[in-house]
Structure formats: C-alpha cells, structure tokens
Image (cartoon, rainbow, N blue to C red; front, side):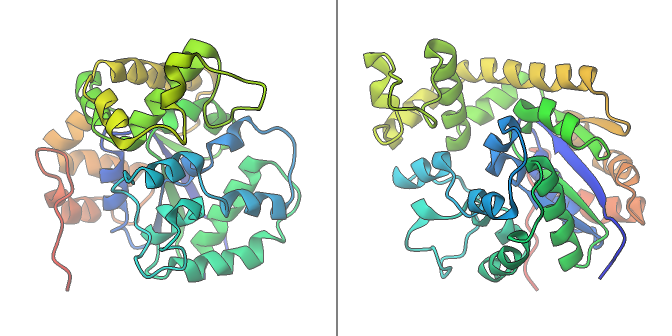
Length: 320
C-alpha cells in the first residue's frame, strides 16, 4: 500500500460530453483510481456549511439519493447503475445507498464488502467540512486499492464547479466540453438529465426544489403531476422529446463552470473537447496522461485509443 498522499484530479463537465468515456479509459492506467459519479452522488454537500462528524457524513453516503430513488420507482434507472443483481440491496433498490449505485461497483466486484470496510473507518473521521470528508474518503479508497492517485468524474459536475474549485484547490482540473446541440440531444434521451432539467425548471419557475420541499412550500397546480412520487416514466420521456429544453441546461452548466474557472483559476488546468478527443484520440489522450502524471502517458494512450469510436463510445473488449 502506498503511504504518501495520493495525487488528486477532478474532471468537470456538463455530462453527456464524453466524461464517462474518459473515466472508462483511465481505469486502464494501473496506478490510477478512476472514481465515477461520487461528487454528484451527494450534491447537497456543496451548499452545506460548517463541520460534521464522520458518523453524520457516513449517514449521507449510506442513504439513498432521492433523484435516483425516483428513477428506480418509475422503472427508469440510468444504465450507469452497476449494483450487482445478487447484492444486499438488490431487492430494494429504492433504498440503495448512493455510494453503492455506481461509485463502488465501478471499483470492485464486491461493492458491499468495500462499503462495509469503509463504514468502519469513516465513522472515525474527525469533525470537518463535507469537502474535507470527500478528500479523506477518496484518499482512503486510493490507499486501500493500492493506487497512487484518484481521478473523480461525475456527469453534470459543472453545476457545482464553484464549490469544487474552492474546496479542492490542490486538485488537477480537467475541463471537458462538447458542442451544445449534440450535448442537449444526448441529455434529452437520458433519464437522469431529464430529471435534472425538470428540477432546474421547478427552481426557476417557482423557487422550489421538488426534492427538498418543506411542508409549507407549494408549486403551481399545473406542475403538481411532475413532483417526485407523482411523475411517471411516460411523462419524463415526453419531456425528453423536446431537446431544446436541454439547450438551456447546457447554457447553465457552461456558465457555472466558466465563471468558476475565472473566479478561482486552478493551479493545474487542462481543457479538452469531445470533438478533438474523437477526431484525434492518441494525441489527446497523451495530453491527458501527461497532465495526470501517468508513468507512461504515450503507452497508455496507444493501448486505449482504439476503444474510442467515431461516435465517441468506448468499444467493449471481450472478457478473458
């Protein structure tokens, strides 16, 4: 196990722009922990002030994410969910701890066991901010898995870019973008982004977050059928039929990220575009590998570049 502090990096993006592709390729670098959908699994941390105990922090991580629970309830779980069918929560996915939906199953074949191991240590974390807890947890998992660095990637992290850049001042930042029309079309077909867009629409139209409503808050009668607990799969799909809704989401995400980068410019920043990655995967991946301080950026890039298709998807290799 490596004892020195691990390297730290965060990929910031709107989502639906190739960030999952990067994460899946980074997995192939043997000294790097590719952490997926961790930061945005607990988005409320960004607005939480003050310090909390390790026990309180673990309570958040071991609780279900309301948005994901809604998608499970209506039968539209995102394809990124990797929790095993024989797992402890497989018969009650609406209660699935958010850490177990995507993050831990992407790291191990036995996510329940890693979840239990983390619980025994996180409960003893000192009282500190959410951001400090996040850093300590990712550092811990990196050491447990024998890696030298972690690279976190969450779809839609652009919306919390101001908090990320203020909280992780020593992290290397990769900012990945894609043209808005294609991003919007991809968002319109993805249930998580359909729900994100709906949530932002609630906030902009009536100042209410439907997933954090208090008993004294109300929404207009014409929106009540879209509240969690009432919305259906068909209603969510219907909203996705109009991709122009998601151009506004793209604009919001880009504005959040670009203003944050201007206000808190990171010491180490690499900007990438989805289009360049697909057109010239080898040189773009070498740039990324060098920036992340991989031992052999060129060798890694040559190894994985063939898995980048012209459509931007990762070609799956047969299991051996």
